[in-house]
Structures are given as C-alpha cells and as structure tokens.
Length: 287
Ligand SMILES: Nc1ncnc2c1ncn2[C@@H]1O[C@H](COP(=O)(O)OP(=O)(O)OP(=O)(O)O)[C@@H](O)[C@H]1O
Ligand SMILES: [Mg+2]
Image (cartoon, rainbow, N blue to C red; front, side, top):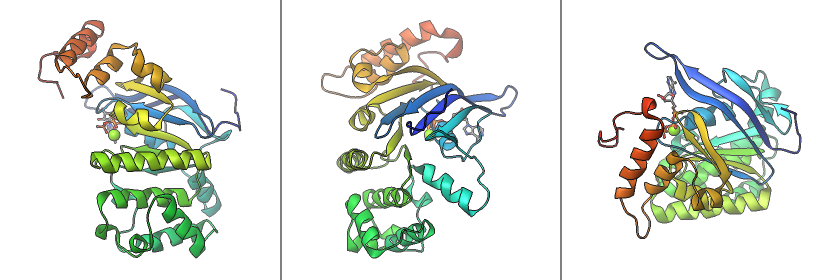
C-alpha cells in the first residue's frame, strides 16, 4: 500500500485473532478499504462479524495482528506515549460508542466536559463550546446538565460533540444510534450528514442495520465472520446485492411489501453456499 496523504484513512490487510478454547477466533481477516475527505463508509454485518473489533483497531484500542492503518498518510500509533503523541493520536480518529456514558464524565456537566477537551487541545473558548453544542443541536440548558439529566438522544449528541471537539480527521461510530428510537435516530443521522458535509470529516459508520447505513454512507462494506463479502456504493449494493449474505441482511430489514419468508429462503441459499461454516439452517435463527 502506498501512503497517500490526501486520503483520510487507508486500511490494508487488517487481521485480528483472539485466543479461543482450542482454535483461535479470527475476528477480522484481511480487511482493506480507504476513505477520502468527506467520505462515509458503512460497515455492516450480523452480531459477531467483527465490526467492533474493526472499530477498536481504527482508534488504536486494539492492535492488529497483521496489516496497516494510515491516517492522512501517517501510520496510526496504537499505544501513543507522551502528551504530544497522545493528542496527535486523538486528532487522527475519534470514536462514539453505542453507550454515550462511555465517553462522558458522569460527574461533569456537558459544557464542562467539552471545555475540558477543548482546553486539552488548546482551543477552549465559550464561543467554541457553544458552536459545538449548536452543531449537534444542543443549547445552554443541555450544556448545564449532567449526562444522566439528558435524554438518550441528547446524551448521544453530547458524545458526538465531545468527539468533534478534538477535530478528528475520522469519526468512527459503533452502533451509535442503535439504542435510540426511530425518530431520534433519524435526527442524529441527519446531523451526521450535515457535519460531514460542513467539515469534510470522514465517517466510519458501524451498524448491523443496512437501512440506517444507507442514510449516512455512500459506500457499504459487508462483513461476514470477519471477512469482507461485498464492498460497493450503498445504492448499488441495495439495488443488486451480489453476495447471498448481503441478500440475507436485506431480507431481514422490514420494508413495505416485506415477506419474512424471504429470510428463510436467503438463509438456505447462504447455507448451501457455505455449508461447512454454518449451523443448521432451521435452528431458529441460530443466534
Ligand atoms: N476481547 C475479546 N476476546 C475474545 N474474543 C473476542 C473479543 N472481542 C471480540 N471477540 C470475538 O470476535 C468476534 C467478533 O466480535 P465483534 O465484537 O467484533 O463483533 P460485532 O460485529 O461487533 O458484533 P455485534 O453486532 O454483536 O456488536 C466474535 O466472535 C467475538 O466473540
Ligand atoms: Mg459490536
């Protein structure tokens, strides 16, 4: 892979295994993709397909066994040592998890948390704090609140604002809207699209839900048991899914005219293709 400083993210041949009882579990295998400025990649797949492991490697929380991650042409430092290196690492990639409490301090107001992050990165000012809050649709009331005093949607917006305060090149979201109800989900998705358009930040949007991915992303990468089975523009992937597993994922999303029987058909098709890999097809979904 040639380092290209014009690309926000270059991922090449990532592999991660975990020790299992007996054979090691291959969580991610030979994963490669790149992200241009303002680009948004959706990573989709069922539970256990390796999405979170990928997200954690992208922010340096997990070290790949093999492969390389470049941010704007520079290798991502997994264990940054020293203040300068840590701040640089933080500016490369930020992550928002499904649980916003993981990135917010329970004892500090949202405003104080944002101020703290801004101060760390040398860009603190009341105007900047207000600007960040406005960017995620929050105001003075939410700034003065503790995380537990906010709604789930407001809390997730606050977690996104906290990540944006660092002005990262890339924002990784791991199931960041999955716990929100549908209308709040739509608001946060719109917000992400706006932020992406206005700032040129790159998004890696991890979700088990293709329907959600298509609102935010222009490309989707489908993972199945750690491997990439399809990686194409979202619109193409939805219109003409090539891999049986992608068809199964699509069949699983309820939509007008949805026929749950299609899921059984797709499962059988996938099973026929990859028989040695799969549990019995009729084991009630298997998971
Ligand atoms: N710390 C760990 N130790 C051992 N195995 C792990 C660890 N983290 C993940 N795994 C295994 O790696 C595989 C991929 O897990 P991962 O969390 O990446 O899946 P996922 O796609 O995010 O699933 P979900 O949709 O349920 O969040 C699974 O088989 C999981 O059991
Ligand atoms: Mg996960």
